[in-house]
Image (tube, rainbow, N blue to C red; front, top):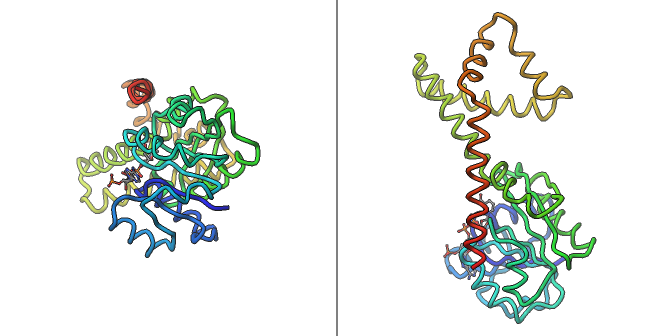
Length: 268
Ligand SMILES: NC(=O)c1ccc[n+]([C@@H]2O[C@H](COP(=O)([O-])OP(=O)(O)OC[C@H]3O[C@@H](n4cnc5c(N)ncnc54)[C@H](OP(=O)(O)O)[C@@H]3O)[C@@H](O)[C@H]2O)c1
């Protein structure tokens, strides 16, 4: 399986690192990156081929579009003459399959993916949606590439991608914000910065690992820490009286709405 990446930035690097750690032969990967320093670094660190032209794209199986959303329309115009039956995987936030297909001259072998930043340590979650021209074998190929950087999930419809963007795409930032809040609370309660950092980080990491590994559901796990009349109960009562879940919903809704607006703008 030969894979070409267009764009050698953070996300391309994360996916290639994941493939390398899963024993994929990275010499079968070529990265088209315009920045010469980034090209040299990618070749040296990840043992990939690098290029600055589209000429070899005719002879590849899979093309991963890994440039910023705003750069994608111009990239599609350059790529269009070299398309035969390759599978295109787009990880660009907000760009809909219908718009990619149009920019590529009615080309429909496209899988749209929304990965997230924990992909950098192979702990990501990628949501996938396939265009009408994608074969079952190509779906499996797309899934196996993204599985190298974490879990994968096929969506029932591409329209769900805005919700996915709001939950798992933006989600790491909400969690980092929560950790920040926990650290600040720890310091206000008299702990030093080092202790606050360690306690907040390890609590979130440990709780999240326990939730992933435990056979109990999340509500049961919460109930197990929240004894009647105890300290945790007081904390949870405060979160509930301040409508914490409603705040999280409003944050996710704002992100999803922004994703729709960005998709509309980028389609122009
Ligand atoms: N990072 C995330 O959390 C995340 C999550 C989900 C989806 N995504 C999506 O992943 C995509 C890549 O994001 P990223 O964070 O990896 O961005 P990035 O680090 O900026 O990577 C994009 C790379 O593409 C290069 N590039 C620009 N135009 C090019 C062209 N015409 N041909 C070849 N290379 C070109 C850029 O070079 P220059 O810097 O020189 O322009 C840059 O190295 C985006 O579409 C983003 O929406 C990212």
